[in-house]
Image 1 (cartoon, rainbow, N blue to C red):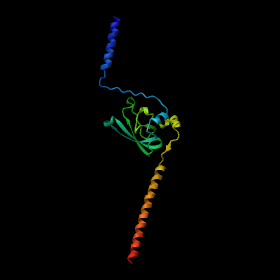
Image 2: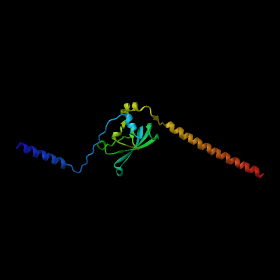
Image 3: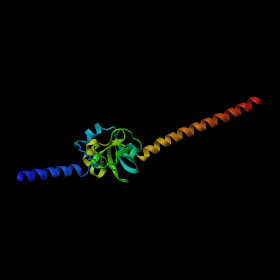
Length: 178
């Protein structure tokens, strides 16, 4: 008699568990830990940057959200001053990684997409990873200003040369006429 009651209760628990929420989906994210160098090797883009813009969720792209970073230091990939990275917006259960605006992170991405398992960390929690990665390349405002200043000087020099040449041609033509 006890066996029959135990079996009936077990079957009821199983049926309740299977039918309680049939419409809900279950997601699981499990990440294997690894060194910063392993994450570097498996990424096409590694940088330290501050989130300056959090874009809207894009349901048409599976719930991806766009994050724009102001880059301070780079170890791999694009060394632009601003970089855009995409991450799933489903949270940790679906391996999504949410970046908070105005916070600085160490970011590992593959083709501008990242997730919970990529190794992203708040910069305040990334001391060990930064030590493993080494100095990286600084992407500073000064570097951007210097390169734009050189470009401006080259354009300005070209304009001056063209102006002097056209003035010289006019003077030469006037001398030939007289």
